[in-house]
Length: 171
Image (tube, rainbow, N blue to C red; front, side, top):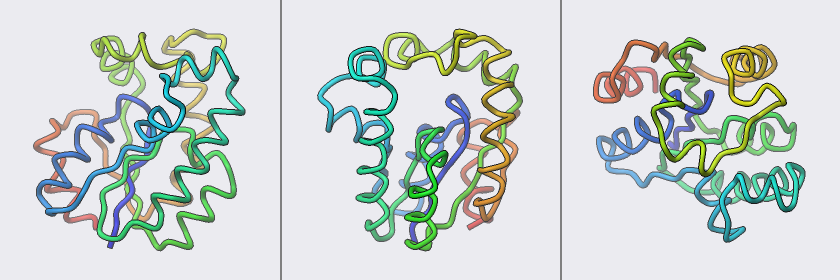
């Protein structure tokens, strides 16, 4: 069975996902990485040069592709589940989804401490990556994530190493 990890950027989907994949002896896929590879440019560049719609279209192609992968740990981009067709592809594939819940203040700290974020990721609103942006986006996306996830893990105070056994138990 494949497992999908969902949540806000900075929640640990990639970091925990890689460790989880190692523990399960499965490959790891990050949908954002595949979009970047497909486009040949960073997510920020896609947004700036071609717009969010183009990014979301590429993301949908990638979601369809990864949902066919057996026995894989998949980290989905935070907005991937905004589209009905992506949620439907995930449901049809029978992926076990785990939502990584994290408090906004901790998300902001993690994002600010990651030098890759500013260089490669666009702001998600006109609030420019602030705590207000995080709270606003979470208010919109969290109900979607909770509706489709088979499990939820509070990761605010967990290290990636500590989170892995919990994810295994939730599968």
